[in-house]
Length: 272
Length: 299
Picture 1 (spheres, rainbow over the protein chains, first blue to last red):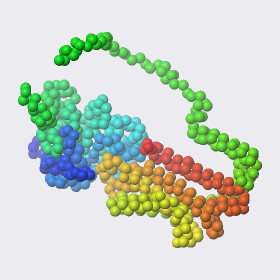
Picture 2: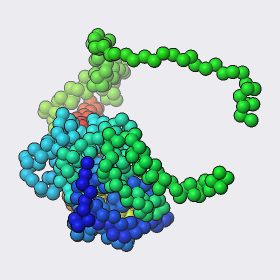
Picture 3: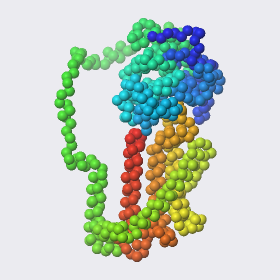
Picture 4: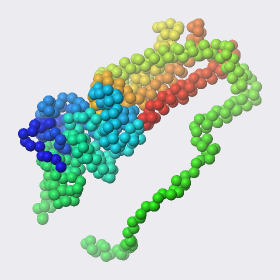
């Protein structure tokens, strides 16, 4: 489906030895430890790992909500220091939409805040995006009337309306039911084929990573370190159940769970 | 071991193996007819306003009945006498004037109170020292009835509107500041990040994200502040309305009590209640319907 970027293209986003720490009430937690990766334009870059691998924290750092204590994240060569609308984010939580604005108002909001275009122009642009995510009929509705999937589609439309350099998605479909989740995954890939954005997608589901991603960064937990970076651009929804799909699934599964097998199951393995 | 355990028990009855079935769906047909409209009386009973009116009518009948049986309009005038006095005071007497005076003072005190509350809350959201200051002041002054400050206010500002405004500010300020601030702190981290992500910062972040997101709490603060202010004002006017040449509603009540015009005292009280009802269930209800209810933010 995608071209593998050739090595002489400059990456769009570079994470260079990023160590992230945050404070809780009584601990200083190291979320990631010297994580490095490159994202090229047009990639669907998935950050995959179990809970506690700092993948959401990593995405927050890319969004500019926190600063690395070591290392640097650069977007098109410039270090990221603060939140900005060139890195629009779609969160997992449904309350990311402004409840006091309609669906259309939510999509127009960042366009107007950033004075990207005049109101009438922004309205037309927002309508266009809502048509792309099949929400045209609901543009006048307030978010509390929408289903979970519709809320996420609104958030995706709002993010894409800004035409960000990179779209950030933090487990956007994790709070949806299984059927809706699958549909949203398909829609996202279809939208990517139509619009051609760059996305960093955080998930803890191997299957979702294989379906949505073109390249997968596998992180280990406590703290997050890079375990592997794998290609999945050749896999799509039609490859579910094929030996190739299952093999990569297995491989990632083993990567993620080897540590545990070594520690928890070591005595039994000795028996066998 | 496992085999032994199984054979020791009587054989468990297995569910029968049944054929599968796949159904082709027909058109839904007459299902819609299963719902019938409610009868007219049931529908009337579902309207809150109607039910409340019924309660009011019952109370009015009880009042009128008791007053007539009691037959002592000096102590307990009947509803009709009260209404007549109300009409008389409104049309010819000073009632409207007095009410307007009260409302004017109230509006001034409420406005100043909101301004000061805005300053305090801005301080509290922007700095930690501000938060501590607001929390401490609120903890100190919120339990203190505003009317208790009236003697002090009279000492500082003398008899007149200034003292009234002072106590009203005190009664509005803490309720509004406390609710607004707790509303701000309750805004979810996701919504905050979404706002920053959209490009909001500084004052625009407060105005376009925090204020609307905290609006349910702010509105609660405004309502509590209004109720405090209205009561405090009437009480304060009862105490010293005499001095100012154009007294307010409280003074109207006090004056009529002194001249034993009990129906007019009742009429004054009725006015206090009516204004309370109008502000509460017309003004605030309308704001609520247009904002938090429409946004689905009513908890």
